[in-house]
Image (cartoon, one colour):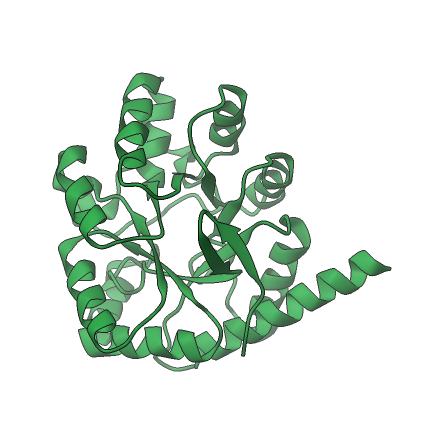
Length: 280
């Protein structure tokens, strides 16, 4: 299967991107699910999942730039893996500078500023620090993105013409509350604010901005996965409400179902349906 793609810098990016939260045991559900994901996703199973993505037309992965993931990437590439890597910064290192060299060494096709960190700086009005970090990311030499859960963040960044190339945009505003990444605390993110009314508001913001958006949390970290029809509906909703220059990022946990093949199918079907409606 070949999935439709968008252009990001010099790279062709499939409009379905596999997200890395399950690989890192970050379920956004419970400690129990975090541990289940950690137990399931051995290095072998992560690599197996990535090769399955390749077979299903997914050519891009969005993964953290921590030492564990970099080790997995090294093995995957040595075994012939060809997927593009979009790197997420690693706030748990304590120093933003400390992560830059290891991100660059991993040769990502794009990099973005961690969304929880972005939102915290925005809410604190620490715009100077955010711009300093983005300038450092620019030195890596690939497209630079801004992760966020807040539509207000995107509106502000566009208004001040922030030096970025794309957004990583969550359809749920998890930053309604002050929060810290589980990668820093070592604790499971529980009782987070997954409010359905956030979804159409973020989609409107995604439509408004001219910059490409990589849209995540379309399945609400399992909250919209009670059945496969609900999952397929979320994909249809996403592609009906994003631009032709946008893509979706979805974490996949193929323990009981071939979620890679299913999500690729839902993506292809949703894009075809959107194109059909556009022609009419």
